[in-house]
Image 1 (cartoon, one colour):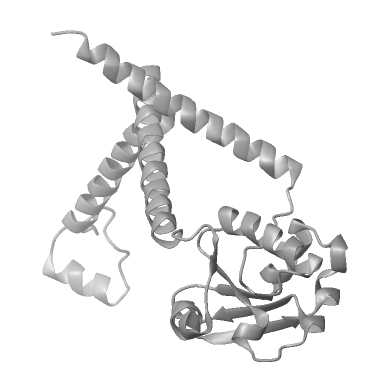
Image 2: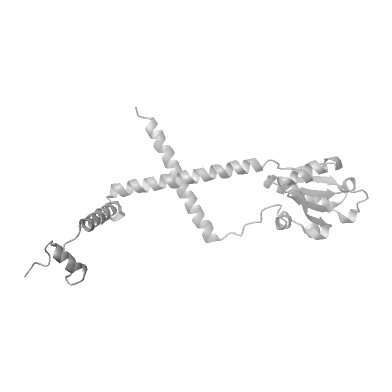
Amino acid sequence: MDDPNADTEWNDILRARGILPPKDEKSVDEIEDWFAETLKAKQDAEKSLDNKTLDELDELEDEEDDRIIEEYRRKRLQEMHASAAKEKYGDVTQISKPDFVKEVSEASKDCYVVVHLYQDSIPMCKLMNQHLADLAREFKATKFVKIVADQCIPNYPDRNVPTLLVYGNGDIKANLVGAIQFGGMNMTKSSLRAILAHHGALPAEKVVDPEQERKKTLYRSSATAALSSDEEDNDSDDGYY
C-alpha cells in the first residue's frame, strides 16, 4: 500500500479532495510561528517579576520611585507657577468712580473682582472691611476693592450698605445689598467666604474626610522621605573623588 504521507502528486490530489487526511508533519510556516511564540513566551517570562532576583526587584522599585517622584515634582512646579501667576493681589484696594471701569469691569476679564460699597460711619461696613481684608490676604487670585457708596452711586441710601458686587468674565455675577444678606453683625469670615464661593469668587471650604486626609499625609510623608533620601545620597556622592 502506498504511504499516505508520501510527497506525491497523486497523494496531494487525494488530500485536496479529502480522500486522504492531511499530512501529520507541520509546514515550515507553522514551525516558524511556533518557534516565534515559544521565544516570545520565554522573553515574557524573563521579564516577569516572578523571575526577578531581589536585587533586580530593588532596582525596579528604585526606578519606579524615581519616576513617581519626578512626576510629583513636575506637577508641583506647574501648580506653583500657575498659582504664582494668578496670586497677585492680597489686599482691599480703595478706588474712586473714575477707576471703576479699569479696576473692576476690565480687570474682571482675567479674575473675579469683589467690590464693597460702604460708608465709614456704619459698623457693619467696618466689620465687612475687616473680613474682606482677611479673605484678600488668603485668596490672592481674587481682586478685592472698596469704594464709598455715594461716590460710586449718587444718593445711594445708607440702608443698602454694605453692598457687595461680584464681577467675573467682564460681567456682574452678583449684587448683594444690605446687612441682612450677610447675617448682620453675626457675619463671620467663614460665612462671608461661603457667600462669595456660592457666586464663584472664592473656592468653597473643603469638607475634610479624615481617612482620605490620613492617606494623603502618609503619601506626602513617603514622598518627602524619598526626596530627602535623594538629597542625602547626592551629598554623600559629592564627598568622594
